Length: 472
Image (cartoon, rainbow, N blue to C red; front, side, top):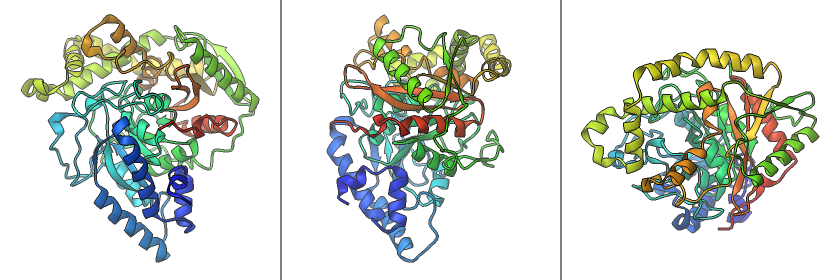
């Protein structure tokens, strides 16, 4: 296979090719770096690279194959991750100048688990400053650009992860999702991104944004790739006392393509409010594909969605302000204008409002689960309800009401599932008139990642949107 062919492989196919000695880890790495070198000047997907370390890791992986060693689920796979995952001895900027010289002495649990499965990381990917931005703007390391149409947003905050996976610079990447930050870049860049159930994946060794809403998860090219990564990273961790002891199923084995008897709910409230016509058309076409696979489609109202969206914002802002309180006192000048304003806004929210948002979370989830998942097995919505805006249109540093409105609209359909703690995945379901991807979001009940991925995988079996590549 040529370097271009190798870069185009899915994550699972790349791992299998190394295991069957059809290629080498070194060849995979060189193929990814060649794509990165060709695209990086335009998309600005990385913050730092460690080529020498990656070459050493690839060489070691190939020696293990030659020696007949037992191989892990990700053996020989070169990856890059959002630059907020601690890797001992390597930089971790978190997209901020405050941490531009920070070198952690510990490694995130999920990175350790992927290394134990045979993967290695070659760099840190661009991201919104401290992971608090849904668009991909970064005043310190430069904005990340959408590989499908460069002036448009990549989605955030895992902007570099979405752009790098879409551009075939990496086979997969870790992102984080507190209000949509995995699903938004997945939707905007035309890739696959999963926000797991709250507590499903360890957050140890990851820069926090919100105590109660942060999630760790993968961005990949296909749902099967996502399932492979989840099998490796999910599960209880003694370093993260909030992580769940719920057994981890074989996500990949669950992908059977069979949707017969499965009930797909289409919300008649909130998620399509003010949606752009091209988004609605692509979404309805995607729903028809699921019905063609045997799913039963039901349209139903959802309870309390406006309140859920407001509560999600309250939790995020107050908890982010608490996490950043010391730096905001000592180094306020080192925050960008937009992030500083949002953090100061968190300080202004009265404590009773925060307690209300926190205390109502459990009862609302129970009511939601009883009323909604008593009728359907999964929900389907657009990931982003509007056609993608440009970076200029969402630059809230300008302070115009239109830019603020466009900025907030980006994450309107993803925030509720963070507050509820539910698993949700985004896959590509078409393109808008500007050539930018449109995302289909599938959400399920707690710990139903396997079901959510089964639905999304079934959709990808009957469509080819996820195989298309940006014209870089």
